[in-house]
Image 1 (cartoon, one colour):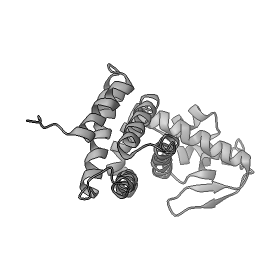
Image 2 (cartoon, helix red, strand yellow):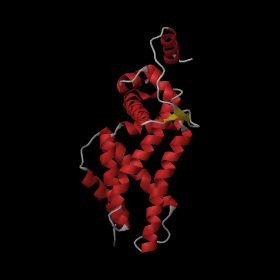
Image 3 (cartoon, rainbow, N blue to C red):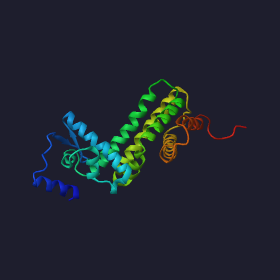
Length: 225
């Protein structure tokens, strides 16, 4: 039993904790989906607090107590929504993946050609990474704490890039032999540009970084004779 569970059980025996009113349905990953709007707000507050806690301290040093304190939520309420620290970490990884996807989506709906679409996607991702630097630490640790979530995160990102590239092929803007390998290469470039210019430092503008990467996609790096 975790120390937080021990504390919760002790408080219950002492009559200090009232069982939360929001009931929830359990997911396979050990998290629980609330059935009320109040429950949704509380669960979201815990997820946001977990991002700050794990982003600052890492998974092993981060704690449930730290999460609930950041969220302004009673310790007992935590267990209404998550069975353990592992469960909220898995939920956080899924949330971050969705946030990355959703942050980029609006920039892709403006009728650009294939190359300009990748420019818009990278600019939006870099801006998101600068505002949410904790995403790198959380996703990196997910390789060991939540390997399935880690793989889904990157397979999902590469899959979305591949879909855009195939659309570009269909439109005649991209060579017909471009496919999954190139999609993963573009994703890798984007991830490490984010690490270098969003997490480590912000010495270049988002526009200049994305434009340089976009020139690489459009023209390659060979010196034309």
